[in-house]
Amino acid sequence: MEAASGLVPLVLLIVSCSAEFNFTQSEGKSSCRASLGGASQSDTHKAMILQFTSNEDCAWTLERPENMSARIVFSHIQLDPNGTCERENIKVFDGNSTAGSLLGRVCSTSDYVPVFESASKTLTFQVVTDSARIQRTVFIFYYLFSPRTSIPNCGGYLDTPEGSFTSPNYPKPHPEMAYCVWHIQVEKGYKIELSFKEIFLEVDEQCRFDFVAVYDGSSTTSGLIGQVCGRVRPTFESSSDSLTVVLSTDYANSYRGFSASYTSIYTDTVNTTSLTCSSDKMRAIINKSYLEALRYNESNLKLNDPTCGPKISNVVEFSIPFDGCGTIKKVENHSITYTNIITFTTFPTSEVITRQKRFQIIMKCEMEYNSTVETMYVTEEDVTQNHSVLGKYDTRMALFESESFEKPIQKSPYYVDLNQTLFVQVSLQASDPSLVVFLETCSASPTSDFASPTYDLIENGCNRDETCEVYPLSGHYGRFHFNAFKFLKSLGSVYLRCKILICDSGDHQSRCSQGCTSRRKRDISSYKWEADAVIGPIRLKRDRRASGNSVTGFQYQNHGDDTQNQPVNSLHLFSLMVLALNVVIVAMVIVRHFVNRRTAHNYQKLQDC
Image (cartoon, rainbow, N blue to C red; front, side, top):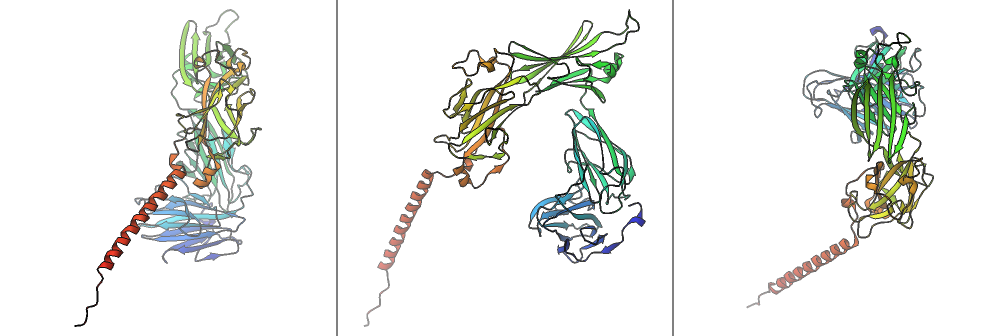
């Protein structure tokens, strides 16, 4: 709102009931009071100013129709600054009372703008204050919205090194009752600088009505950097590689909104150059001061493929894929090496002489045992600098519903029938299309640490189980299926572990090309491209009936021992029955003993004299 004259008149809220919206004070003392601002004809939204003193306990319940969702925004909270969260807070519950499930708790130390949505038909919030004799104020805006409709360009995910985004409809007026969230994510080792070219929202000292909130992290609760409104052009900087931006608007006074851009800033210290290698690319970082000392400009840099340029921020970065930008792959002695060269192009002062040194940065990534080794050196005449670091392959293992391998299983534990066919896939996350995945060994165990006993499904690339079948080599995927089983005299859980080899498809002498071998033709322990993948647990469905339910979200990693969750077996049940029978027999003997004793000492009537 432009000024105080733009405010909608406020009226006192006693009880508000309508066909679409019902907001009532359900609990608390009579001293609880609220002011209602700007009710529309349909009563689908309201603004409230709640004021509290000491020792208050108030609760309100918000009801909504079946086909609508409700959102409540606490855009301005002023509680006791010295109060603790235990004694003074705001709690929001999913349901029609404070007995419902707790959606969240807010107090004076909360570092974010609280926003809640109800999953059920009602939502309740409670305000409790401590004994401090000060005035508290809470501004609330709540409204109904349809979950089936969305506002175009309202939020999204931004993962490029730099970019820009605007509020919906910019530069035209922004939509009313909008809640838009943008998540910005850049590469590790970088932070984000966010600049607003323009913000044109309602003017309010506390930014209660329309505002932009910026959070230092990947969520709307990760730490508020700033909450702004009005006409400003702020700049924000994250402390990590993620940033979250929120636009929240009410039902009146729409203006242009905002226009923003961001760039990534390298955070690590690089004196001259550095190199890192992943499964599908290499990343070279060059210090700009280092280039300036050599009298070079970043515009003079090029790779083997000159169309691949660097990203320039506070450093110069080349992100070089293994299958592009002129990267050269060399396969030799069971080792794969990827090489590229950064060259400084010069412009000679004449056709005969030059006063600049010939300078190259040669980058190499060598794939090693369960890791990658990076080597980078700079040649300046006869000067060589070397750098080495380590990395790892990115491999994943999952169960699938069918042999089409389209839908992975997301449940954990995964309950199956005995003898049910299970489909397993190990995948390599790499950009080089010529690499293939070979399943060298796959074994099963009743425990996640693969202690004895274990059962081999695949060994030396050969099927060792009669129901196991390995699919032919298929690029970055190693696949097989087998029928479910359980271990004798053990628990119902089964874990799978596979050792895979990664080969170049053009190397016809590689272990991958040999396929199944009755015995090893060479010592695999010295093979350079190895990785392990583990998945589990898998359980029989009868164990599910005993345990009651399952946990969603399949775990593609090691799990702890689950012996405490297993059902009681028949031997334990029989022992308990025998013990109970013995207790009954002993009790009967004791009772009979006391009955006989009491009978022997009964009083007898005396004979008359």
